[in-house]
Image 1: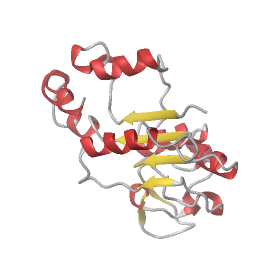
Image 2: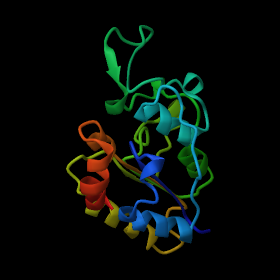
Image 3: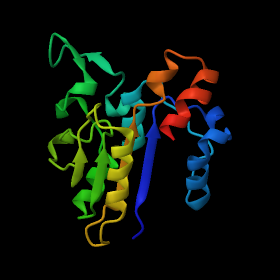
Image 4: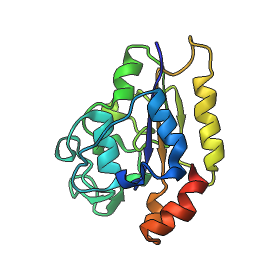
Length: 187
């Protein structure tokens, strides 16, 4: 089975594609598959969208409606979903749980909710790196390549990788600055 690689570049705009700077992504799209578009969820926040990608559910169904939530059924404080692995907040079954239950190996590189024991099932990706902001982008790419180069009998059939850029950049720079100065560094 050929592996499926799902990569998310948080904050990446469709208008960035076609820019000469992003030849690597264009090459990957030519060699594999790419989505022509994606309907984001509302609200347009990282965790609701990424958990929707993983489960196929809308936020109101999977329960992650923002990056930070308040739910008086569980606690009296605000919960930062980005920093919790408490399964009570996550409904639905993410694709890595479905595959791992069928003894199909999966891997996550910083994908939101991969380190949570969803619905008490207790299944996490076999290869699962928890978010580590200090890990360089070069090392992150090297990890994905290492997984892809594993022997077929232990290689993950699904790899879901999350990159927090260019999202952090676009909050502080205009599109022209992002395209001309920051994206070349990332890609």
